Image (cartoon, rainbow, N blue to C red; front, side, top):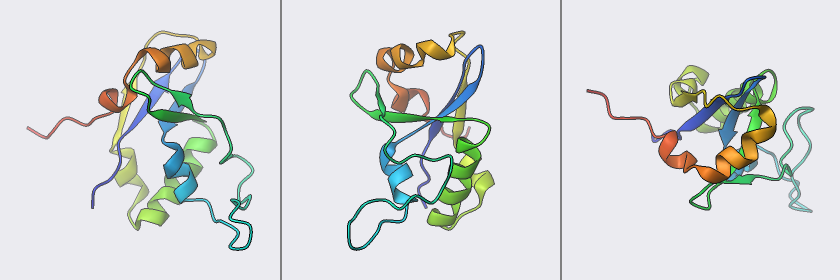
Length: 121
């Protein structure tokens, strides 16, 4: 199984897990009649506007206290794996920025490259 990689961005005030919009949408049940995602969570919002990195990739920042843990649990269920296997694929980054600077930071960097897990030695 090929598990996705993610970046956990730690600002001066808080931490955010940057995830792909399609991963959030994959764990969201869709109403078969309207094809609109069903609201299944008080924390995850499938309509949240993504940030775009320097390579044009979209990323949604999930807040560390409630959104990120719920996302990891639901994604693990969706991929039929364990949450710790998802957590092992998360790279941590502390760029010494304020939370208000996340959008500019993402736009200035290739997040896909930053969250790539190096091969085991």
